Length: 390
Ligand code: PMP
Image (cartoon, rainbow, N blue to C red; front, side):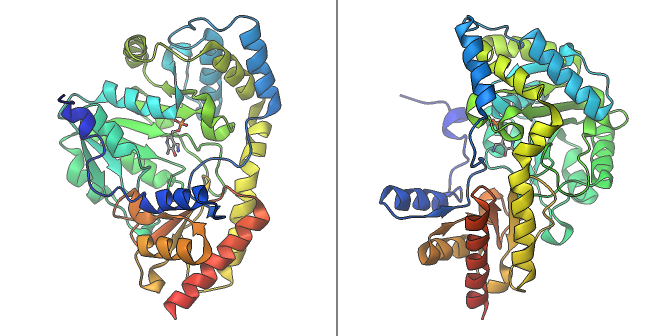
């Protein structure tokens, strides 16, 4: 049977750079102890009080169809949180609850792009982005960035493509680079979106993980609230990756249509998950800081390890749960280095090439294992790089 080209062409074909990850998983299945620094998931599980709330909500009967836009309570809580952080007036009518940030990214592009429209995204990028854009029938167009500029997009490279595009997708704090966009970068992006009439889709799922500088939501910049769709999620901020709860914040008219989209696709998010998410958000910033703390600690450890040698460079690690390491001094590609490290030391990292072309010669390290083991793995990685460079 014929399958739609929309679905068969989702990944764009060719190697997606995830072979090293799959090889590591095969080694683990074969009983080999592999230190995995690959996937962006906490080494802790969802906190017990959140699960107790989830259980209580389910037991009290919140197991039927939940309100498709999200419960009023959760939408109000998300709106209040966004307003408190950004100063932008936000009500529940600016919020739709989605099954995670991933579904929010898809829905936001459904709202922003017609089939055949050009949808911009910044390279290096979170691996699913181009497929999500193709999924709505848009034509993905990557905007290259440069390691020497900490992968912050350049005005001229953005403007070379923005005139004919419908949307621009950005992510700060950034996966895979760990970079936080500067106020100047965000102003440039906002000006470009306004001059070339683009939707800005702002993926802010790492907004509670900022170690240096500040997270500025571009929706708060002048003239941006009416053209920005902010993607948020419980996954990273509250260690609730498996609960699949996220949202889009945007103009009321778009949210109304996104609710119609939800009616025809997901039919909402389970009520007990929404109640648990509401409870989790109401634990406030101190709880979010607790969830983020291990990554902040490991980043500090990593800076010490990296300062002891000259072969491996660290892209400014300002936020999120990742480090982007420059291994070009070894003369190897990120992919070759990642394979070599996996085979020699059973340490799995992601090649920069898995995230586009801009991070070639780099590797991404997820700070998602216990501190001592993390520090030891990183030391081994640096020593290995020094040997290869010699
Ligand atoms: N955006 C980015 C940048 C991510 O790294 C992820 C998860 N790895 C997501 C969105 C989606 O997360 P979720 O669907 O769990 O909210």
